[in-house]
Image (tube, rainbow, N blue to C red; front, side, top):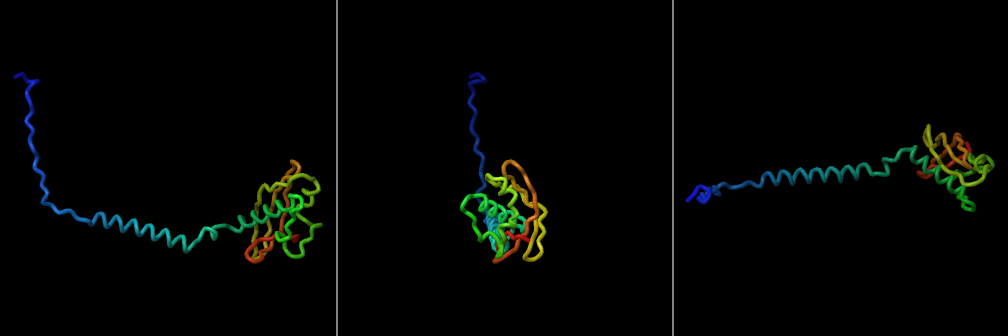
Length: 148
């Protein structure tokens, strides 16, 4: 027989199966995972998402809803303005006079003082941007647009 034709004898390797394996690594990993999940659940209950919204965000929503209500013909929602709101002193009067659709661009420089706030609101009407100071009042956890 030549070297290429030689067959290699298979040798068996003995496997030691007398060693007992422990469940501790699995149990520790399961415990860590359970602790992380419990921590996430507790954090969610203690600090819900709606409490992570800033006053500036809430003012932006109030201004956006007010603008949408006033720019859609026939959908003027008085519930978005504070009691005694004077439509003749509306912060959108210049934009309404320009005609067309009024768009909310941004709200900046929000200053909250208890249940009242002011902010610079930028709107676009008929292709022209304008910025003015808006006044807000908080009633029943909602911000409403006011004249002053």
